[in-house]
Amino acid sequence: MSNASRLFVGNLSYQTLENDLQDYFGQVGVVTSCNLMLDKYTGKSRGFAFVEFSTSEEANKAVELLHDKEFQGRQLTVNIARPREERPPRRGEERSEA
Image 1 (tube, rainbow, N blue to C red):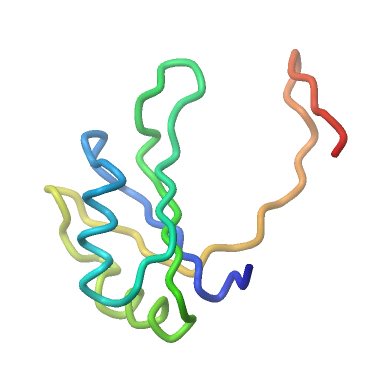
Image 2 (image 1 turned 180 degrees about the vertical axis):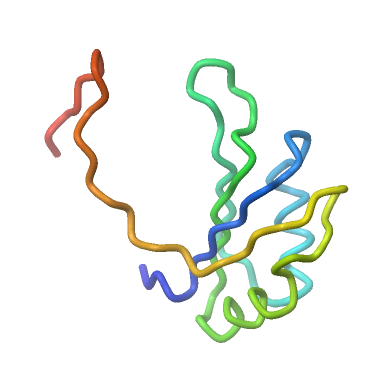
């Protein structure tokens, strides 16, 4: 998976659904995946998501067109996603070795 085609989308309304993001970002290009981050305990939105496009060109276009634009009453943060950092497990959490 190329990170150049994967976007971090922040400052989302807590009512935003994955379908909403799919439709909104689909206006810019072909969305291959949409992953709304949910709180592990409550199941509610954490206010950010990752949206992946079929090409890095479409992802860059989405950043240009949608960063700082209003969506569902909130001003979006849209950036190319950084690679996930390895973090030590939080206290009380077990991390399984893959």
